[in-house]
Amino acid sequence: MASIFSKIVAGDIPCYKIAEDDKFLAFLDILPLQKGHVLVIPKTEIDYIFDIEDDLLAEMMVFSKKVAKKIKAAFPCERIGVAVIGLEVPHAHIHLIPINKMDDMNFSNPKMNLTQEELAAIAAKINS
Image 1 (cartoon, helix red, strand yellow):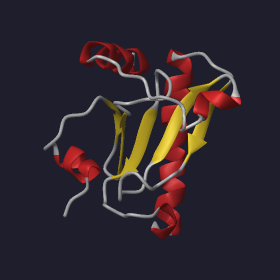
Image 2 (cartoon, one colour):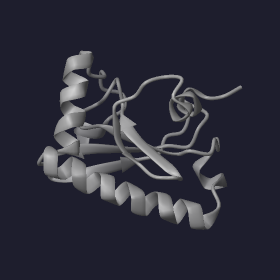
Image 3 (cartoon, rainbow, N blue to C red):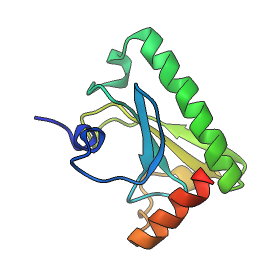
Image 4 (spheres, rainbow, N blue to C red):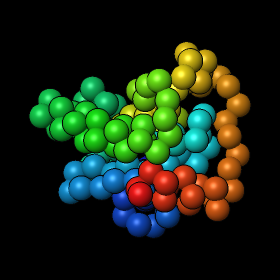
């Protein structure tokens, strides 16, 4: 059965797209820890990040770096935090999160509940 992320790649579920190429897709997390929280996924459904072939994983990190620079330009912060948890969706993904302190990236914190308009504005800001 296809993961929710594979359904996003296929266009069956909409997303707030930040970047895309033939191998990867970056889109807003709809329940973010911080404004500008983006997920980067390979378009091929692979459950565990360390099951990704070495060359593709390296390309995924370079793609993530480009996305991180876009996020940092839109949401000035100390760093763009990078996390790989991999338990919530069976499709490898990287979290890119604007942070100013360690607690900004605490996945135990309550998630933000943003409107579709707020999410669209965040995506537009990152993509401008």
